[in-house]
Amino acid sequence: MCGIIGYIGKQKAVPILIEGLKRLEYRGYDSAGISVISPPRVDEQSSLRVEAGNQQPAISKNGKIDIITVKATGKVSVLEEKINGKDIAGTIGIAHTRWATHGKPCDKNSHPHCDCQKNIFLAHNGIVENYQELKDDLIKKGHKFSSETDTEVIAHLIEEFNKKFDFKNSVLAALKLLRGTYGLAIINKKEPDKIIVARLGSPLAIGIGNGEYIIASDFSAIIRHTDQVIFMEDGEVAILTKENCEIVNMKNKSIAKEATKVEWSVEKAEKQGFDHFMLKEIFEQPDSILDAVRGRIIEKEGMVKLGGLRDVKEKLADIEKIVIVSCGTSYNAGLVGKYMLEEYAGITVEVEYASEFRYRKPLLNKNTAVIAISQSGETADTLAAIREAENKGALTLGIVNTVGSTIANETMAGVYNHAGPEIGVASTKAFTSQLSILALLTIFLGRQRGMSFVTGKRIATEMNKIPKLIANILKQAKDIKKIAKKYVQYQDFLYLGRKYNFPIALEGALKIKEISYVHAEGFASGEMKHGTIALIDKNFPTVFIAPRDSVYEKNISGMQEIKARSGKIIAIATVGDKEIKKIADDVIYIPKTLEMLTPLLSVIPLQFFAYYVGILKGLDVDKPRNLAKSVTVE
Ligand code: M6R
Image (cartoon, rainbow, N blue to C red; front, top):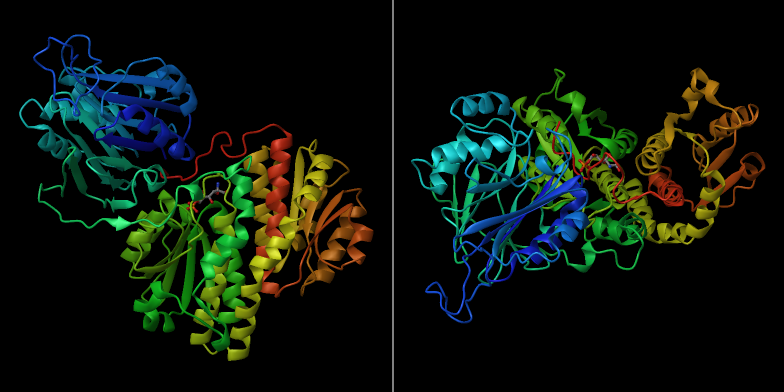
């Protein structure tokens, strides 16, 4: 969790840092802070006056280098207001937006944190697991702490080593003592021409500009400035000056790294006229699915081409079992994948919450493929599950949206979603792109295992039609909003679906819970009569996903059972289904497609429904309370 950004160059750091923090706010938004190195005051008489053109505006009143820090509880806009009117003129600085782990959200726990002498300031994303023992030791040595955070120990550790080493070696020495994860940006008044950044388990990228560097937790905060990015890897430390970027490993050995050209545009990361990122991302789905399948479907051969799996193609042919590990929405996508892969590729698939998998003793071997599904590619539980799988000798694969993310880097092979940046905390377009990739994977593995050309071609042809079918559903946004208005006062919802649409019931319930703070339960519709039906009355509406598929009749029976108990029903049905209109109170229609692809359509009305209930309640749907976009802690 948390977002960090740093700037070193010729421009004023503050506006760049604030703008970057706003882009990173999805990573956490309970408090924010900024630290900028301020040069000594330069005046007409001063011998410190620098050459024209390279002149830095003055700020430090005492004629010494200073570090100006401003912190604020709440969103970045609160920090921005606090800074307004302050003359913070330095060109080197770091900033942080927080999602609390240790210590409640408040100014004193906000980053950047500093040492006793207020020389060293740092912003941290991650957790120092052994912070208590380090803190006790530092307190014995006389250090005074001013926050409840785990992070602060890092500043004091560096201070301790800085008594005998230079800045770089002090950082290296301190990092060796840490257990846990970090993405770090550090400045030091004693060496005020540098930012040092370090990564272990929390993402960090370095944007290379013209005489400037911008470092950030992800490149959505960098792309406004440059498309040239170095993705740091675990165990790497970068020492940045305006002119140079030196990267070393923990043994202080230089590492040569190439910059990557990032294709995502600034516009893609902005709202483009929509009220919320979530709405924009719902509407982007025809395009994001096209991007996910583009160049990968060879329709006339009933085949797919997945470049990221090329090197493991032979190995995949021998795989006997797949285990999908993921969390939240990505877990729900994995469940749909199970139905697809078992039915069409004839391969056993287990789907596991990554947070459980890592603590079990899973039975894996070299004939098991463990697939991590993750939008962010940084989810701590999913990452740990993949590491566990690798230790056990399994083939590890990723279905990941964020290029250069840790899960993408650590899995042996994989397929990128290419859905573009997803900023809304509630996952929408990432989910449908995950389903699209799973459909392609089904063709890929199925054709390796005897799926006929005809079947492969049928799935490929139908998959190619999905973006247009979704575009048709999007036209119903206003009608779905009207339905949302009718139901906005209800406090409880049941979501039911069967077979391919059981995971969509889970996903619909998750969506409304997370952005509308409404209690909702997702269930397999056949399970309802085994207990859940007791909840049904006129105050407990059901969203029933019942397209015309192989379990349609069963779903109709389930609906009758609900109506018999005075329950209200919103049905998601296939266009042309008149029968369902006689039973349900409200119907949202989706076009017809192949049964295995119906989840790609049926989830769209549920995304809209959750969105509209949320905004009708006046909630901040892009940044729901208590959540963060990527969960990089356990
Ligand atoms: O980045 P990931 O896909 O690994 O994230 C997994 C979950 O944290 C995520 O899907 C979460 O459930 C979303 N907020 C759901 O909308």
